[in-house]
Image 1 (tube, one colour):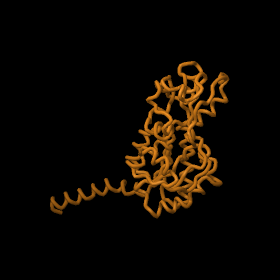
Image 2 (tube, helix red, strand yellow; image 1 turned 120 degrees about the vertical axis):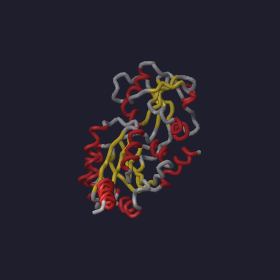
Image 3 (cartoon, helix red, strand yellow; image 1 turned 60 degrees about the vertical axis):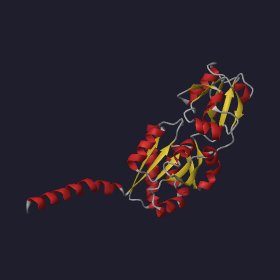
Length: 274
């Protein structure tokens, strides 16, 4: 073989070696779950998500499937860029922020979730209403997404700029800020509100404002999901958490999944985009 032909042959072989793993990876259906501000543990939740994804793959005849559980939007977006997932279950603020950049299409919704985020509350032990909180200190761990809070949660009743914010890092820390007098008021979600009943020093804390109920976490499809595959998956969503998948779903805060469309989220999308 002449040198030029040899070089061409070696180059072609090298290209095949490089491309082959990528082609193999194309058979994998990747799913991510992003629960921001959740009270669960990411490391503990991952094995249950693995089980849920395995069951889903079996139901849909997918050759390969992987799932990844996140509590951080930045980490989830890094996964999206590297794994090119087909589907995701997202907390509502993440969905609204990521919908247009990633061209997300709603195919389902979480019937019941332990993640919280269905309703938000302002609590205090000195103020009597939301107006009495304005101009005062407001503790919250939800202040990292002011567009969502202002347009969707408060929906015209207030804005984060109306308060002196005290950012907190943990759900319980937000409540404690009111209990110990560090903040006059606090913005929490329904999961955090449920924790108040378990606190020994909760006396005097009351709800002074609450939001409308918001839609649950959506199940979305990315553009990389083939149309036939996503339509088949959508039809089988309500079977994912049945029987053998029930305990796995429950451990990551999901009781059931149902099919849905973009129209089911039209109101919050319009509020967020206005």
